[in-house]
Image (cartoon, rainbow, N blue to C red; front, side):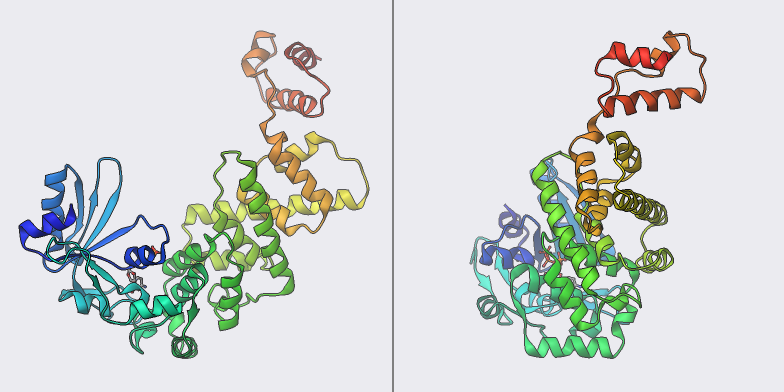
Length: 406
Ligand code: CTP
């Protein structure tokens, strides 16, 4: 009972932003954002003490997260005025009224608030015409400097437009074009840009949003040489198909779809440029190394497979297995999307659905028990046994053991 806690502290409490927007649109959204007219951290601590929750607070920002025992979270903010001292920088925060807090937001559709205190409970507060814009399905900024204050909003506009099936209003579109022309997008930090791209690529079908980004000339902020060609677009469209296919397999394997889309969009970039892009987007060093290594490996395997198909040479399951074994699901889906060859697609699909789950029953311990001297030969023997399993040449444990000693 957030309102009750507000009542007892005599603090006005509101649900605000995306949660209210989605509530009115009938979309699911479990990210509850609460604004408190007053000390939000004090409010959060009082509420948490009453309901046995934990609180994590950021004194500098006047914000807190209430964490329920089951992990459910509520974000609490003190109504605040944010100054962006330079475009793209983090805001400086000062306390003010709910209206000023809402005025600082990106788009009108995110400025709705619902009162939670018992007096006027559930009152919808709409200072900036948000309700009208929800009805008109329109993405509109509140003032002309919105994209100057925070150029990442350009990507947010595209994301909301696409996800909600809204349209960016004419004037807002012009402000976007202006912000791009004036070079404000250059100031967006890599990490923030990556976050926005991730959000866009997490949609089940981001193609429209990607085309919109290309239309605004935004792809060059990912990498100066990145453009949307028919070939890129083909790979992205294929990526969507293979992701859907993979989801329907219900293998219980987690795939980061956004990685597949990012790989697909940038499939035309050379290794060197891809590396520069990762650096630009501030992909963590560890992840960057791994991603680049896998991408190179994936491209090589793709080449090998395409060559083999072109030569009309028969391919056995164990070959497919050892080509693909080191790759992550994201890379496997990317390879499938990138290859225009149906046979190559079949190889990867066979690996994903069947081969990757095959294992031989014997281990190094069995080889030891057989009296074979421990050493690097073990790997070779076990691989040979596994290959025989994959190709259906051995079917039982006994046959595996026989093969191991041969
Ligand atoms: N916001 C903003 N400018 C940004 C990021 C966020 O003005 N660059 C504001 C938005 O108005 C938003 C609120 O901060 O309502 C909370 O941000 P976030 O949780 O990212 O947005 P949601 O609208 O909740 O989006 P989503 O539904 O994707 O969570």
